[in-house]
Length: 119
Image (tube, rainbow, N blue to C red; front, side):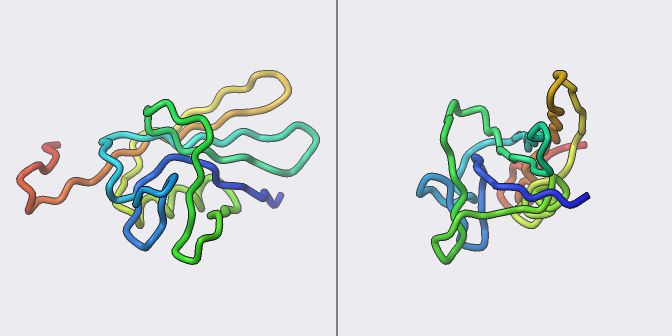
């Protein structure tokens, strides 16, 4: 089954992407969440990045000024990994008519900054 995903979310970037005009790499959060919700009776999934900042309409724009689109949750996760995040945990919820998938991700800190994460 092929999913078409539209990426409206709150993120951090290294390759020219921005969120509401702010470069992805400049969004100051340690944790974020990739949330995907299936659309009933359609083969689509809407993907949102939640940075816990209360933004309702956040859009990621690529270096060419176009909205970033993904084919599914793993595509969004790979995008975030390329932009300095790592996977932590996944979980799903079925609310009757649709399913909601969440991937918790964590920013990988720069060891040279002296703020590296201790595992």
